[in-house]
Length: 385
Image (cartoon, rainbow, N blue to C red; front, top):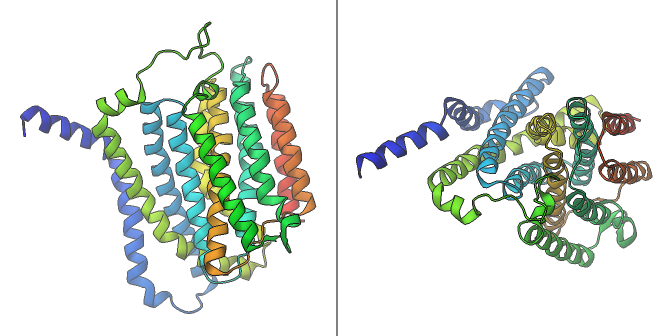
């Protein structure tokens, strides 16, 4: 191999496999190996302090690995540009969410409502808490913030349909709030087709709808930047390396999620906590890294990126979670309870209406953000009511 190629490879390795990335890898895989080694000692009913300590450690490791996944997805995002880059980020978050929900569903105990509770919690966290904080932070620094209305409108159209399929229709098309086998198969096919069509439009003919509102020229064209194929050809080595690192950081999340689900189930049972709290905890773990990215985007005045990160992540989560949990239910014969309570349906409807009012405004202000945070506080009270 030529000396220049070796030097280039060495620089690439140092840029991708940073000290932080190596620490995250060692922590994730080391924790998994440690759990295997300690498995005989952890059998049976653990003392409550030990259970919570072990659960806290596993959750912390999963969060660290999730930060690593998001970090690598952010690097890919900056290299690829919108909407492709943000799509990598949102799909990464959605994949982690689906993995954790599936782990709980397939774990011990009764978890018929975990998918419903997790997606509902994520909806409230993303559309109210994260968006609200971002709008307050960004609005105080940039008084003239506005998003691309076409992009937000497309996201809202998807969310209205997907969240209705998830939370409202099961009460009418199923038994006791769960889809029957025939309805479940039909919904899986419809959701997959709709989400695939949305992705095709988002990365194709409608991609400028998901770019910043001021990013188009007077002629309506997007500003010139290298085409995706050109970026792939010029930075193939870096993109491959970061993708592999992203997968290497994501696998420990998959491997540790089963233990987390088992311990979380036992811990909440001992506390007598509301069943929905497990869904809230999963949603918080999943979207914590993305929250920081969203607030940074708002502080930078990138309001459409805020919408892409938040609304795009929720569209991806619903588009992937609904087919995944229904498929798991069909394969295992377990009933997947999706129908929401009237209170949560009201909160969800208010959230969608408030989102429409906020992002259709000529400029987004901190007052809009405060109303979103207020609605999340009401949701938080309803969980413990």
